Image (cartoon, rainbow, N blue to C red; front, side):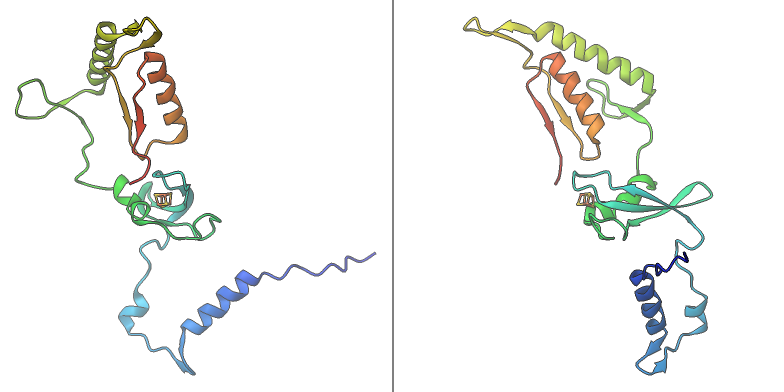
Length: 192
Ligand code: SF4
């Protein structure tokens, strides 16, 4: 028996075509464009588009990341996302500058006690230094009982403040780490 099922009507494609046709006209007259305007191309023309997620907050807005020759050339709201439908708040709109920004530091900075200047140090040196300082602090300040004899197993000398670009998995690991170290102070700059 022949398949009599009619193909589904693609309303979105029809609306896009209608909008494109209308944008070429002003009322009943053809829209007048200068030669320069005709030659202009979007900054994302020819770029590869990859769907992604805004790194900042738990709303989870969808983004479109445009790359050309392996480099990010733009990040915009993803109109296909059911969460934000192409919109982004001011923080999400600035995601491109989070990645591509000549003013952004790309090395670890360290200012030694009493030093007036910051110095570049290696990542390995910084990680070792941080680990050693945390261990020294915890060894000095960890208490099994408080002044009333109640078991507390804590140190009041360590705290964690997470940044808004930390994702769920990173925050999970940070909470695990600092709870195991025994600090009750675990905060996150989740959204400002
Ligand atoms: S920071 Fe803004 S754009 Fe990013 S997920 Fe949150 S609301 Fe969306």
